[in-house]
Length: 90
Image 1 (tube, rainbow, N blue to C red):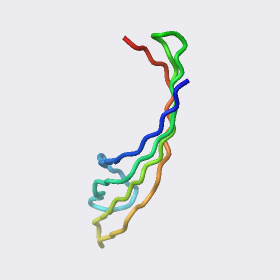
Image 2 (spheres, one colour; image 1 turned 135 degrees about the vertical axis):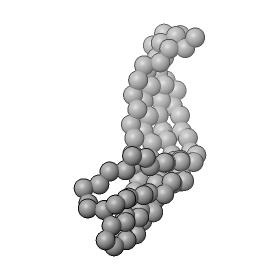
Image 3 (tube, rainbow, N blue to C red; image 1 turned 45 degrees about the horizontal axis):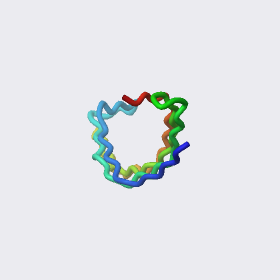
Image 4 (cartoon, rainbow, N blue to C red; image 1 turned 180 degrees about the vertical axis):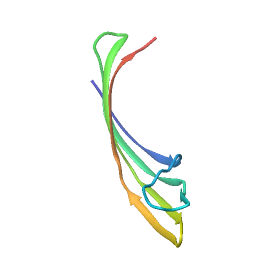
């Protein structure tokens, strides 16, 4: 059992933005923010193991929707991601 902690930078790029609003275009700016992570590795054999982690990211983007008027706002959210898997070491 090997625990792990991490911190770093997160870069988020928004592509293929879709909306149900009657607007001509919607754009979201790219985002840079902090990321923190905690997890563990558990080796079943010297080659095979299991891993799990949880991470929280800071994401902040400026949204501009252009239609009959122009809407500008900032979206600030902090998603949490989970990862589980099997690992093989060569």
